[in-house]
Image (cartoon, rainbow, N blue to C red; front, side, top):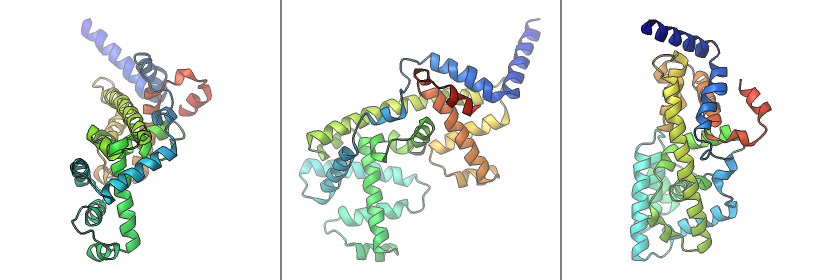
Length: 291
């Protein structure tokens, strides 16, 4: 009788989930997840930026660039080398074929005893001078993310799904955030305050993402009620967090990229209702659009 009862419960749960999985996820699983974390959920996407103004981010970027380009004391030299080493580790795992060229262009310009000009760098890499400048700017931008976290990526996301997409897309940079040694590269009080706020917000958001991803993966891979499409969604999420491109994922699965992008969007929708405190707002219209 006990075995029969377990089989009956499994069958009911499986049919409920598979028959209307969207409704089950949003009305039951996500709701229960939020209820267990209501005191620590993210209040809104903009809150991840902690009211840091674009001007503060711009000042921090200028300070970082000046630290690389200007006169350096012994403490700064060590911090710059350590930051560049951590950035090199990030670049070494990038699937982007141009990442190493960007890194090399930056080293030629800023880290040699005699800086190399844009024309010479362009000749070495077989690109234009404009491309070299774009490479160097990209390196500065990404190292600022390593220092500052979320606010350094640009404008705040427009909604919760965009916020989740940003966290997943930049997960490797956010997770590799540099240590407190970087504060010496930002001497201004205003810049240091913005840096601290950004780092604190990033740690909180990434903690929420990690918890939501773990729970969501468990939901998708539940041994009693799992379905193939959910298993695929969880695996695609894991690959996106690791920095694998949609094109590479599609090739691995032998499917079209539109299928991968559809799963990515659904993952973002699902994680959005797990990570944010949507009960604080009148969400009836928004929730209906998800079902």
